[in-house]
Image 1 (tube, rainbow, N blue to C red):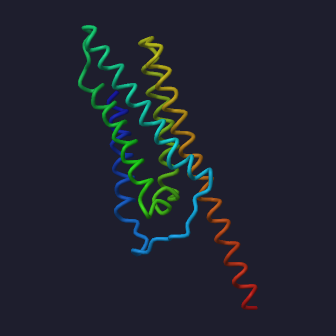
Image 2 (cartoon, one colour):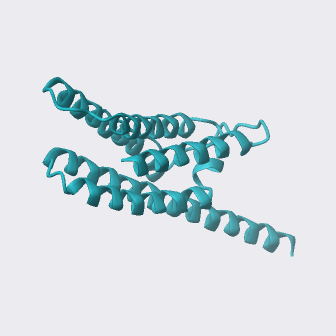
Length: 173
């Protein structure tokens, strides 16, 4: 569980650093329309992540209310996961979201994060808590979907910007 806390804190730090350092020059594109894939990537997936981390909090509260011992590292890992999805939701609604979530380093980190999620999943599976295990598997799946979506969107935008540059050069020639 402390591995989960470390992975979550690192995700928050990377996202926050990219969000604070990647500026778009103060210009906001008013005519920008997000594609359906971008809307799913930036709104639906983080909303699912928030719900899953809230379910995890409810599972811990239930465990606490039934008299079981809840260790502090469980609260840290679940609370940090909730913070990851809160930060992701906040930065997805910023004006410079395309500079944050189309960054290849962040895309790669979400895939590495999924690998860590598998390790966490394997360590949790020994406890035989079916609902918690199912929730952790959905978190891993969500990490894979988020990282893959970020790669797809960034490659689509790179392709469209290279096509625009080709059109500009062909007009000049």
